[in-house]
Amino acid sequence: MVSVSADADDLTARARIRDAAMQQFGEYGFERATIRGIAETAGVSLGLVRHHFGSKLALREACDAHLVKLIRRLNDQVLAGAEPEGESHVAAARIAVGPYHAYLARALVDGGAAPLFGEMVELGAQWLADVDRTRSDPPVVTPKVRAAVSTAWALSITVLHEQVSRAMGVDVFSPEGDRLLARALIDLYAHPMLSTDDARKALENLERHEKP
Image 1 (cartoon, rainbow, N blue to C red):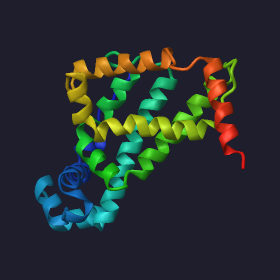
Image 2 (image 1 turned 30 degrees about the horizontal axis):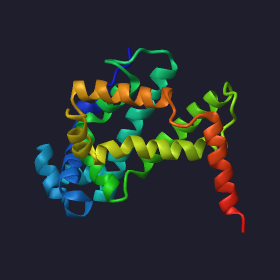
Image 3 (image 1 turned 90 degrees about the vertical axis):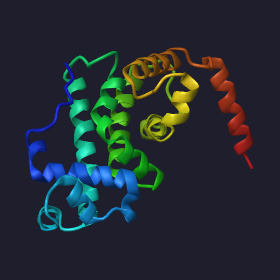
Image 4 (image 1 turned 135 degrees about the vertical axis):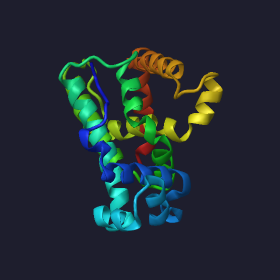
């Protein structure tokens, strides 16, 4: 079973400070959040925050590194054949970052979370490259480009969760919403909107318009 339980060191003061920083960054944004506010939220002294991290920038880097670690661990477990909790690996991924939705949404809007985005693109590209080997219709775009687009789709739900939830009629972050979203994604991937012939014609039209 895929597990997203916390590391042993997540009970330490350093981990509490990191989680407090993610909460403060998510609520106020990186610029407005303060070291003092993070210390108060974590229940530690200002000096201890500076001792462990030194600066607010280092704290943000630790927050991003934590999310990357969670996603990398989940990917490794899936590759090892572990079964996901719930209905899908999509749900398991959201469970992994669930406590950090506010941080991630704010970071994405502010142009941050680059390490997480980059890691998801690299992992996605590896998956797509493996899938491409069995395809009878060779893709015309590289795995990395397609992974960048699919990562943007996946992470956009974190930013647009209120709009998506309203349109779906269920909180997309609830267990019911997770299941419905997973089924919708499976349906979209299993039933492409373009046939192979339609896709070929669309590409030919693009190429004609690209010619000088």
